[in-house]
Length: 494
Image (cartoon, rainbow, N blue to C red):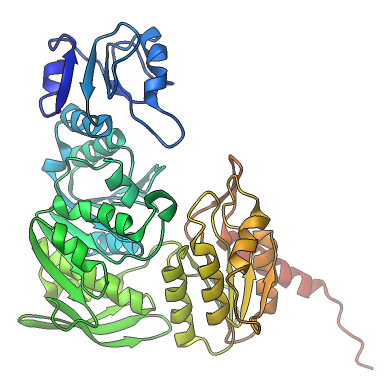
């Protein structure tokens, strides 16, 4: 592709290259660049692409897009923001795939995965359309899973993925849009047919610094939508609405002035049901996922799909057949008269939500196993310790993904939030041992919440990723207990 074509929408500060140059590819990773490709130097968390310009020149890069002039002789394009430039030229390279499907973006602290999957389920149930999904649990074309590394991929991979989805016939693409993706321009240039805001609670403050900055990052989505769906029960709804450059549809449970209101919400051990009330319609909705948060997720999904043109009379019954998402209030079969739930809850609000849900149906005690990730927001650790011990009968504090931090230091920071002197908690560093210990405590009617990792099937220690699945640990331990029980000799009753 000609360089002049790639740069058609890039804001260029200085051009020191032949615009008729043929570019054979786009690359932003100096380790994999090939001869003839255009290199985009972006600034990352751990390194800066500008440091590797000499390397890519030696490997045969044809041109550089950068924010500072290179020290070596090579054609270059100087721009103010190379991340935005990467997003822009990637869209051109793949032929603007985001314009060839209806795009729905969902942002917020909690609920993104559930809402995106619910929207996908509704569309597929109510039509014969093929749907692409980009999110934390994986990328999907229909039911076929693709690989993923980020909640939202880097802009080049994002455009490549959208192109693949469109090529394979996806009429809709539903994506989780993280604050990092918005702040770092990974989704720059994409116009969403519908943008959805779920809620905002403390998270990623190690990156954003303040809740206001976090909210402003999320609000970028609503500057790039044709229509927005906003939860007005959330205190940050106003910021989202102020940044929306489009029509807004609101939803809520407590705010009766919203366009779509959930009324008569009934919470059950295995589902939630409510009336979805909008102008001119009232529909009873049943979603087979417990918890008040599930009602909010359903409302967000109903609002988004009605804006896509689906009839609420078809949407409401479709939710009854929803099968749930791996790692979100997921019930692990045990064969016992107690309940084990695996949930991704890794923020204070999410942990409070799942524990409050458990309180609604637990007939016995609530036992919680959780930890906090390393190299991530440290401010939430004591708060999560406080919430877990206040809402659980027994809490076992353990590891999550320590990464490069000392696991025991993370645990100490969690424990610092335990203010209740009567709190019943234990510290077991090994997550496997912690889960097994919790299972051994369970009796009929009890509920065990294993929080923090959800769908993840690994733990990260240092830079090493090892296989670890909360569900597998539960299944293997219960199997061992059954084997041990069979081996136990029968006592002599004489």
